[in-house]
Length: 588
Image (cartoon, rainbow, N blue to C red; front, side, top):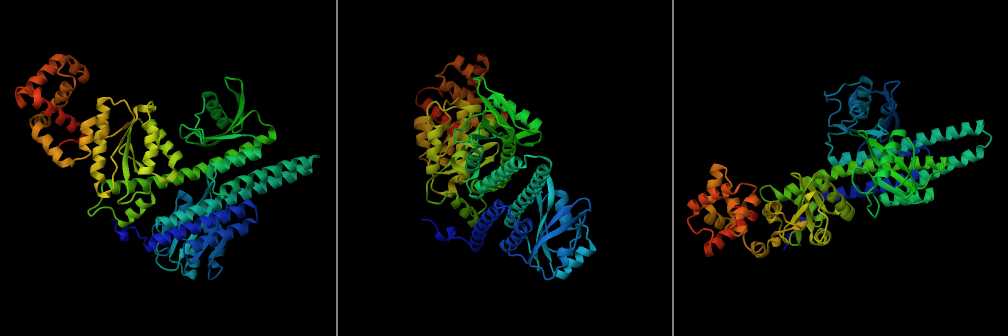
């Protein structure tokens, strides 16, 4: 029975959940406010106040970078005793504000006035002293590859900022950057529309086009605010453009739609051309059908994603396609950053389960395992995928599509490791274990038997690794492997204690194992191959890729170590079984 005390949520966990719910409400409320394109100052003031509340801070403030003047100008604040700090323009090269702007990374200190790791500005220090602020956290507002400003929270006492604080502040900083860019873009577009209306006689037509652009922006923001993710974004694009839209994340091999169709060469070529020209490009497939591609963002010289529609687009539609691509780029960058943080947390959690500290996983780790459906007393499996980097990327993307963030998985020692509840494993087994399943990149996926106790995970993980290695050496013809893949021996080993089996292996094969350890030879592998080949020297030589005389010399050495008749009769069967068991579970 589980100890219920281990799964009861701690006060810090409850507080974290409340904060996450409050953050989600803040994001939803802010997205609706942003979608209405209200007054910029009101929107940013609301966000600043919400951040102060979420972090239980004494003050919060927001400032915009004025590069020409070399300062950060405050535009919103909440919780101030006076307006001194709100009126101070902070030089960009001073304080943690300057450091956050220079590095683009979150910066914090528990003692602002006493911290000597950065340059101080006398006016800023005086304002901080007036407000009696001691601890401070600063988040850069990043958008379109530039720093727009900073979001700051402060406490009037010593305070250490945790990763959760940084995550909350980063989320609201990202939203603030989107709001600022949206307002700037809207202001530019409205100014441009006004100028065109003054210059051109068909002002109504141009204004109608601008209205439609704003409507598309609103529709896409509302789609994301509703929490539907990429599916909602794609539906919103299709609805506003009046035609079906495909979204492709080019950092993986699959398209981001339900069919997971790979992009064909003619489509991929136009993605590169669109990235170079910065505009939609129309092409033709081999079957004569026409399509238009707009690249969504470039990283390290390579396109990140693309928006694809069937047919050609009119000039006014091209701008809508650019907007859609820009929104996709923003979404994917935020999504990938979030996935990076989640990947690190999953990696650390799996390592704690497979290499636990003395006394086993901590209560915090048990609570986090519970969030992924992995609980003491309930069935789960250890799954280990081995193959090329590309094949593991494909499998990980398949897991992302099928399970999202609910499946605990991470890259461990160049393999993909998952801790899967039995229901999730059933889905994995259905897809990978089917006859004829494709083995891209020599993919092999090993799994444990059904487990119920967390404390045996390290031993079972080591066993799965040996199963995968054995399958790799023996040329196993299926993707999914386990001890049961090895017939009666595997079925037997799943029902015995491993350590006594290792002692038996050492007792029977000891002379060969010792000789190989001392001389770096391969007598154990040679004996196994010889028995697998039904005592055929020629077949053994082919399997080991050596000359037949080499096999004969090794067999003479094995006979001297094990004695005559080692390969025949009952003794030969015992040795053959122990060699197969050694291949799977090793020796002491």
